[in-house]
Length: 402
Image (cartoon, rainbow, N blue to C red):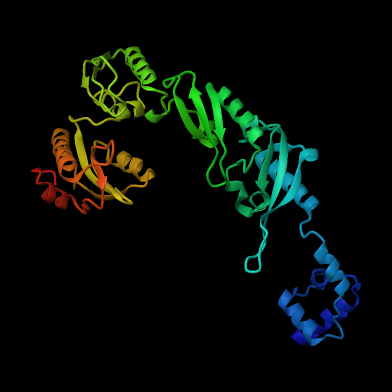
């Protein structure tokens, strides 16, 4: 069908439409009629070009246009039904329709130079959760708020079910229930934002870190945790010392210290197999094993095994270190934002690598300067090392591993 013939059909169809329709409604109806006639629909640009060329045939109803602008652009009832249908099927939950509604939130009122911005949210209450659903059972009964766009978008099913917002009172109640289920004592909830989740302040009531204070976002706390790895969450030195003695005694370790030396100090003890240990307390707290003995626990540094020496950096800092397990250590640092500069070309005897590190730590402390509470980390502006060869030359440390 040629263009002229199609345009004639379009104009004749529009003539039959009611005068009360807006231009948008006319275009929608027109395309429906064209599809029935097996003719390709037209776009807005084509429609308005035809209107300009045929002003006597396609006449706009200004009254209908004015009334349309006064109406709310969002069909809230349709959006509500759509959201309920998607969430019920995708998340396998039942939603209380009487307590659910769609609302328009004005993010920015807009000015002469800045457009008005809005956000459409769906507020709903979960009444039931199916057995095979991944949604937290404890969310039943709470008022949840989620972006309509996040619910309806094509990739929405890949976004983990999340609470976009909660009233603070509801948030506190939920966190108390969450703490109780994890055998924790709820202390307080620090409200957050969409980009920065709310922080839950709690205290352990049993397990390795019994009586220790911690801070986590709700998503992290929902995961099953058997320990907490930040020694700075302890309440005071008395509790730290009490826990340390009890933990070593429980694991049949012999403590050699007579008093608390501070969280940044070292602790001397014999493990159950008689190995002498003197780890930093921060390393001991972070140990995922029953106690921090490198010889007994594969995760620590073992001088009797082959080892690697590495150099890394991030933003304005640099550090060197040693490890028996290159891939695991690299993955561990990458998570914290570190990037590798250079590793030794191969692994070397652990004792030799450890001796090199100790000598470099002395040089670093005396000649360059360390970051607070660190023994192998420094500021780039004081010394920017770009290779292991440069590190060896500038430190003057004799070593055969690089």
